[in-house]
Length: 440
Image 1 (spheres, one colour):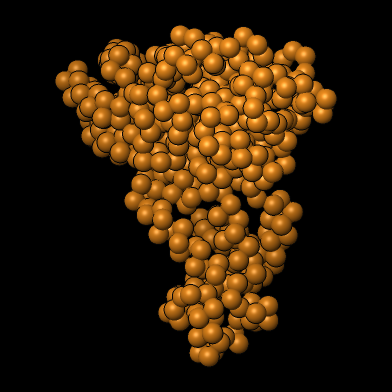
Image 2 (tube, helix red, strand yellow; image 1 turned 90 degrees about the vertical axis):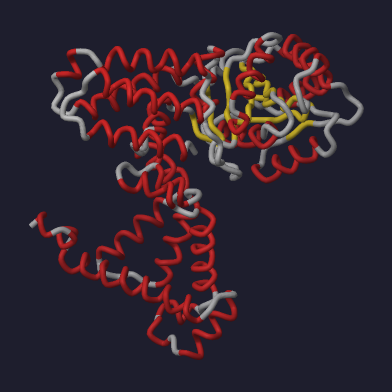
């Protein structure tokens, strides 16, 4: 996400960092590069103009001229103005008598149906009783897709053939009320492009069910087109929030920066992958930090808390502090890391060099390597994982054949394991301070 934009901004910041004192010509040269980077990322031109106008004014103030490191001050100013452009984080307003309807609208291909399932799962994890309505009788298999997703996550889905979308919504809400649901998510029909028929239909649904939230699901990879789609829906229904999908792709990312400033509608969620849990609440300060290559530790912690098994982690930690680290522990660690999402995304959240390194990571290659490592470990017997010293050439050939890898890859994995085991033995014997002599 934002890879090209982040790299270009980092180059500008390195240039500013070499300036002992910032003069107007230094600031203007840097802002020209930042302007080109933002426009290339498909940020709306008016947003760029207003944003950099404020950055220039603040960068030439006495506050910055007296700073010990004016380059860093400019980065902080740009961060603050980016946060301002992204807007305050929007939160769902689930008030009023149950069941409260939440209407999802958007074009075909924006990921609306998948987002409905992700949002249902997110709401249930926060104590809500949720139901869904498949209100798209036109797209082939649209209802079946939502019903399948509902089965996966354990959320009931209402659909009945022969009903109009308005009738489907009314009947679905009635069924959800009898079932004790507190929130009903309505997956409305999309079209390949904005047209009068779709707008009239969405307007009719909104007037009939009076949703507490009307959320536009927009594809971040479409750039400025996403802004135009938001404007189109705004003309017919009262949008209360935006959900930007495919934020994990190679999109230029400008839509995320432009949407709030141009439409005035708050961004509430970001879709960051295909997994059912890959839906993040929108946090402008964290997103601005990642755009500028400053990492996002808080999101990393939240992702870890949401995916890692706490009891398993505590037991593993206790074993490590005793100097014990077996191949079963190694396999568990690989599985836990993979749960957190693509490796490049995880590195992107770590400040400093690791955030920059994420842009050089071949995400697919890294994922494949982890999958192959897990396959190797799974091809071992329980006795071999407990006593890896028994692994001779014959056993390694069998493991390689069973995992679809080579003996060289098995040997490489075992070397990595032995290095980690040696490190954890050192920690177990001497304490955490042994990893850093300056702690003694």
